[in-house]
Image 1 (cartoon, rainbow over the protein chains, first blue to last red):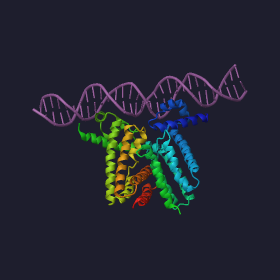
Image 2 (cartoon, chains in turn purple, green, blue, orange):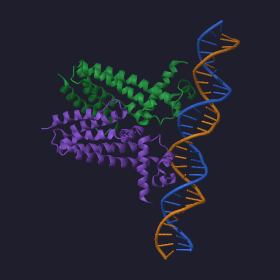
Image 3 (cartoon, chains in turn red, brown, yellow, orange):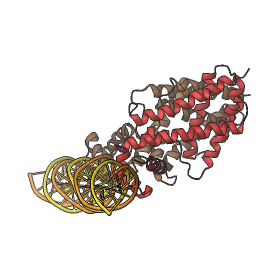
Length: 187
Length: 187
DNA sequence: CCGAAGGTTTACTGATCGGTACATCTTGTG
DNA sequence: CACAAGATGTACCGATCAGTAAACCTTCGG
């Protein structure tokens, strides 16, 4: 079983699911869009849900890697990295195919908290939170956990709002609030 | 055509869609859960999408009425009303069947910006924004539009986070940040 | 060159999707 | 009560859903 085919499937399925939604994307559409036969898919993944979970794992890896790296590229100090997170988000919002957070959408379609897909989405958010808390600690902020959670509320709000597009630039609104929050909690 | 049956249908469909999702809820399930026959449904609504739009309209009315009223009950001044919005949200999060924002979920399942369901969701957010901006103006805050948008980012973030449940109490985190924001913009 | 192991494709399954035709029942008016 | 108008329920439509059986290639040791 060549792993390259499997990776190719997950990669392409990610694009289709992100663009089209989970329930709205049938396995037959996946066949058409990926050029991979259905039987091959079911050799690699027992069910559609298993495929979605693999897709979310890949998305988690890609997104966190991208965001963390971009934050490091845009600023040197941990304090500034927390702020430029919102510049990185703005870049993402401006990308052509931007359609909001894949994990929010996944948990919207699989709402039961105990559902593996919902839990996978929650895991992603937990990993992000841990990283931002670490940065807040490195920045020597008072009450780093609380600041981190507040910054992440701004992040989630900005993503949702950017997708619903009822505000011109949520990333910069969020950044302004973030600057205030970080400033207030620095020594 | 008795309007009461129509209202009953929309009301019950709202509950099922909210609990179960839009694509995941078939018309047959709706028949089972509402006790209303499919033909009746299609006499009132040409398509499933039309029904969903009616559901979202009702949800918009109910939710905004509830939130606005609750904010007025919990505080007297416009400035304080902006703050206690997050106490009202917390009450919502603690309700038994809480499953996040119906409009975020709708726009997650109908992603195309030009889709009527997506636009309906965007309309709801716009109406909320207008109201919060008015409050910020009444509170005599500097740059009321910006503060209002920032508060709403916190609101959206709190709702998403409460649904994904990776943080104990997003409403109070958001409230703390809101107090800071409002304080910073008051004269 | 052979043959077999294993991945791939075609063609199909029962179930369910959104939506509809038509017969039946309910209701307001005389 | 009679009767027409309109709402209702049953039974069904083709299309599509997730998932599968079995024939079909490809590849590699000998």
